[in-house]
Image (cartoon, rainbow, N blue to C red; front, side, top):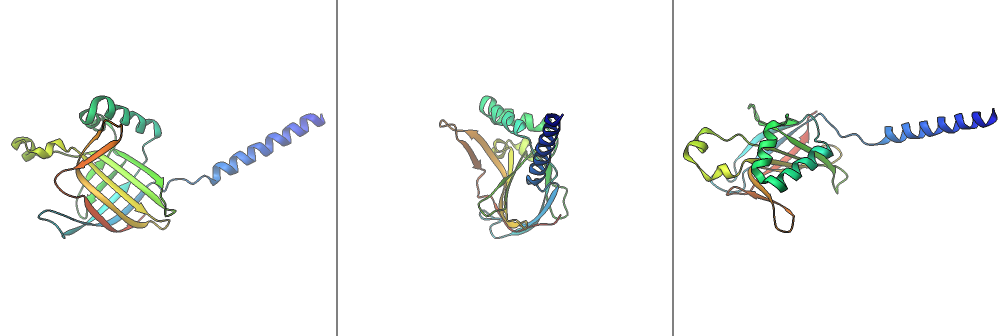
Length: 192
């Protein structure tokens, strides 16, 4: 009987330690909403700005991330775009007053400032004039946004609305922007 009592106490302590350790794990701050000011860095729009809202509703799992990377390696960018088209939105990026574009991929990582790096990507909508005129921009079907925020949700970022992604011969992921630098995101702050 004393042996069962010690076993019960040990099991209870183990359970309490496991529950408290699980409770102390940081949970990603999702859902979240960020506001930013986007500045064009090159081209005809250089120096112009507009407001942008970034919604993060859910995060992409490790399994989904691995599946997407596998598709990109095996089938290339067109396979990735096809897969994105079948996925549900996990967030949205919208200019102030606009509907915006749903994001299919969202991940959060600790950054060097003790805050969070947020990476989001999607298959961007291709406009009718792009399709009709057969412009080169059709080869850049991915949109990417990166935010680096501190523990208070304030920071900076980049928004690249037209990208081409691939793995190079060394197995490294390459991202090519269409004709200009990404938009610089300033005054980023968490609204909700």
